[in-house]
Image (cartoon, rainbow, N blue to C red; front, side):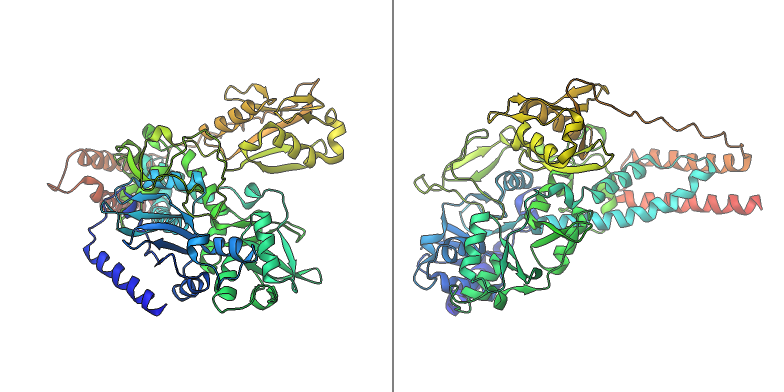
Length: 594
């Protein structure tokens, strides 16, 4: 095993020395991690030891020519080996790996690759160069963390400038439009939805402290989860994950049938409240180095469990629906493009309205043994936390397929938030997956109403094909013309979600009412206009100076000041100079008024 580790280290070092600088906008700009590679004949027990030594949860299996033959993860070992009651010492990785994994080329568009990973539910995606040599493995969670850190730094720097310009508004001067729009867009990205919006309503899987590792792994497989909570006399004492199965059970050589979870669990896990934002939860998980987070309600009851992939997908779905200024399309591309620039001057990259779009690039080349067009049924579903793989093994290997932007379907499997007020005045907020359809929406609303369903016309039932069977209560929402629209089919539900996304909303406000009566919609009364402010001539003079400085800055930005250097790179300095000038005018106007 030590020889294999040393061999892979030498191979990766040699290839890294020959690598060229990553092209902006491609997969390599996302900095794929070094791939752990083993041969098909290695036993699962030996593979687990290598994973523990390298602290990796994804392994590529290579053939004699060092070409990718398969892939497996910690989840595969927990589900297929331990959960299947197989001895890890008696089975080779070739028997449990996922063969013919989908791979990205080094020149593949980063947006296309990440779109595919989100749509398929992949966490890992191997990357190969034009010679079919392995260049690394893309981990979508690490890519997301790096982009979020860049976003946080950008927000912090821009907020300081925004605060410096805030006092100018008191003088009657107009603030730079680009800075205002940029900071507001960042604020909306940083806030985001809460954990409550991604909870499925299904309680987390729990086991007893005396439960064996094999039984716990079987429960994980049965409930399609990578973590279970460990209870002792009704209290949560720990958490046990698929990664623990590999690192703490298989690698040390423990017997899963006799080892109890209390010996290998993580004691005293962190918890999060339902009102914690998704971005804050991801930061919490990243700083704590764990992938699963139990969620509690206000009463201290555990209502669910979220994993890093679910939160990452939910946030990326929100970013994908945002629109950038000047009709440049979704903010998805700019979010990932921000990672191409490692400079601390992130303001110039984000404020600029001339950034190239990834989506306008030529179709990227992805490698896949067999491709199912969007919209076709998948007999082998890929669940969250899975790696990039193909379920079928009988397809030709290493065939190539062109994936164009039109072939990338929208992210329809991520839950969307709905909100309504019950007759008692209690407000309910929940999430529904679009694929659950109208029946899923009706079922969730009925559960939230409880005994109050009789006050809104009685229960409503839906057939298996999504058609109304018996209508008691009705569900309506307001369209873009402020007219009430009923939701009675799957198409109506999809249209309501699409409309909310186009309007930049993170939820659909619905009205649950008796089907024989119109919804009771309360239209908020607009606040009265503020009283006129007395005109101060000294402040007007100061404001005119500010406007003059702004006009000068705009005229200067129209031409290239330094030949060969884009103005975007000079924008932070220009903006900073403008801010200093504004502050000086502000200070002198105050001192003059005294």
